[in-house]
Image (tube, rainbow, N blue to C red; front, side, top):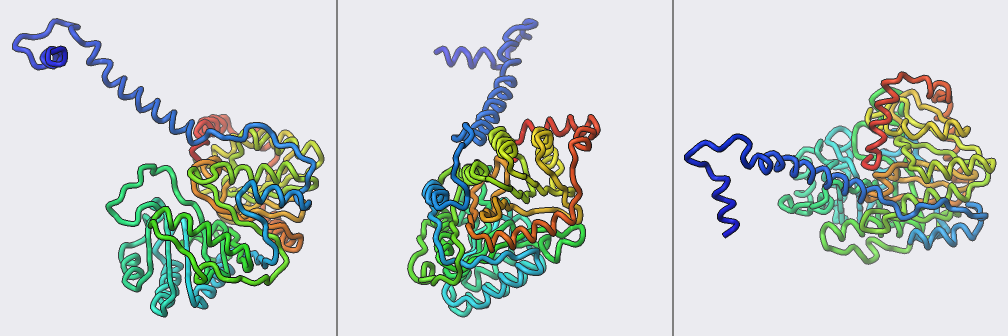
Amino acid sequence: MKFKSLFHRHAPAARPAKSGKNTSLRVSTPWIIIGTLVLGLGLLIYRSSANILKIPIKTTISVGDPDFRDSVGPLLGAEFVGGNRVTPLVNGKEFFPAMLDAIGKARKSVCIESYIWSSGKVSDKFIAALIDRAKAGVKVHALVDGAGDFKMSLSDIDRMKAAGIEFVVYAREHWYEIKPNINHRTHRKLLIVDGKVGFTGGVCIDDTWMGDADQDGHWRDTQARVEGPAVREMQAVFAANWLQTTSRLLMGPNYFPDTGRPGDARVDCFKSGPDESPENARMSYLLAIASAKKSIRLSHAYFVPDDLAIAMLIQAHERGVRIDVIVPLKNDSRFGRAAARSRWGKLLAAGVNFYQFEPCMYHCKIMIVDDVYTTMGSINFDNRSFSINDEANINIIDAKVAEKFIESFNNDLAHSKPLTLEEFRDRPFYVKIADHIAGTLRSQL
């Protein structure tokens, strides 16, 4: 009966209520709702930014030592395997033709996963190539993120499906299915052909990546073409998200054939995500930074290091490691750039070298350590990649491959301007305030 009496207490009365009667409940209700929302947002931010690794890694092992690969491989759940050939491809003029050529030569299977897929000139070329292979009997599987396909027309999707291509949205095979955690995305960029040739990097299917990064509106990026046993690991990463989305398993020689050993590079491909080895992306970077003896070169679109990463980079600098970081001068996200800047002060003060790439948006995601170790793929140096998104990177131990990436890095340096500590400290006060505010929300970037 208490419930009934409470109900009648708030029902419209025949006589006017006395001033102030029962207002406490009425006033508090919206505040309870607001408080619940704030608490929920705080919990989301905490869960999205809580890291397992909190203490700086200390080791005497260098990235070139066999002990490094024998430890890092098992820790990431992806053993380094030898016999690979890795070819860096710089900008759309190189990587799009190479990817389309590989698709055109497919005989068994094509697996493509992309965060963004937008209708346009590049998309039309990929769709035509994929449809041609599907009509020839090749198994074609395409997986795109639900937040990254907004600019893809339904007619493009329909014509792929009509040709026999299995095109699905990550975690939602059918339109009526609901993905509970919309903040969790697949940020992976993978193309695997016949299980023998793989591509990864920061590249999506979008006209933004066209050209040679020599004009505003086109993005500077690097993709890697991989041949050899490591492609089997790349295929396994794709197969994991395909299984999560469709409940179907990809297996057999169409996907996991004998790849041969066409090169000498040792490579692993590891996956990271909130539901699968959630610390892998962050740990892979920190392990390499801890093991650096001579140099660290970072090419990153979104360089938003957390406190532990800042501490470990400063420690590396203090033990004599030269650290060079290339970031974009022109960024596609003003908020993201502001949050990134909020994290650079201590590194600049410690002597870390920063350079801002000038020609266009800089979208690379690469780190080279001691001229022998390279990690690259979809992982940004920020919390979203380290804790929230599904990601995939390849780690390469090979001086000749690193030399090619360094050549590209040095070319980017020639098109960048240094960011000095004085310039950083002299930025306007309102910019500093904006940077600080954006930095408080960096766990979601």
